[in-house]
Amino acid sequence: MAGELRGVPVGRSPRIVYLSRIESFSASHRLHSHQLSDEENLRIFGKCNNPNGHGHNYKVEVTLRKEVDPVTGMAMNLVDLKAVMQRAIMETLDHKNLDKDVPYFQSIVSTTENVAIYIWDNMVNLLPDGSLYEVKIHETDKNIVCYRGE
Ligand SMILES: Nc1nc2c(c(=O)[nH]1)N=C([C@H](O)[C@H](O)COP(=O)(O)OP(=O)(O)OP(=O)(O)O)CN2
Ligand SMILES: [Zn+2]
Image 1 (cartoon, rainbow, N blue to C red):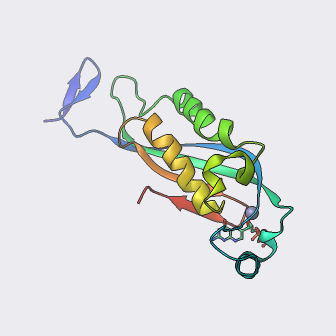
Image 2 (cartoon, protein in one colour):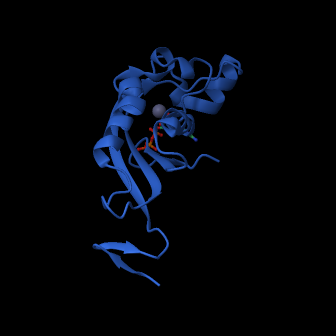
């Protein structure tokens, strides 16, 4: 039966929470696939294929699904999550030209879908096993991508 031992709940299943933190970064990019001709690129990506590129102020929301430690009351210390996001997102993407400065995007089109996958892949091994639940990116106020590792 559920009860307490020195103030700590015992005898019941763990409490699972969804813990999120948001960071913002600015980056420029151009939508262009090396697997397509110039004409196809222009037809598919339109204005976003302009060789001069364009920029966004991206907002990234990272969510962990994790049990609350009954002693600390935390699923994960947000100070630690901030440090992981700094390393996996800010240091590699902020104020960068995605296509030229980030090796990953030299062969992969820098759509928001692929930016979300890149961030997931960068973060997943820096977090406790199985805890990363979702990476959500607001590329603009209207364009949003969510990736859950599937
Ligand atoms: N599936 C995707 N489609 C598009 C992506 C993408 O990442 N994934 N990206 C772009 C462009 O890079 C660009 O982000 C689109 O900008 P824009 O159309 O200007 O954005 P808004 O919809 O917010 O602009 P409004 O003109 O204010 O509606 C295109 N497609
Ligand atoms: Zn864009």
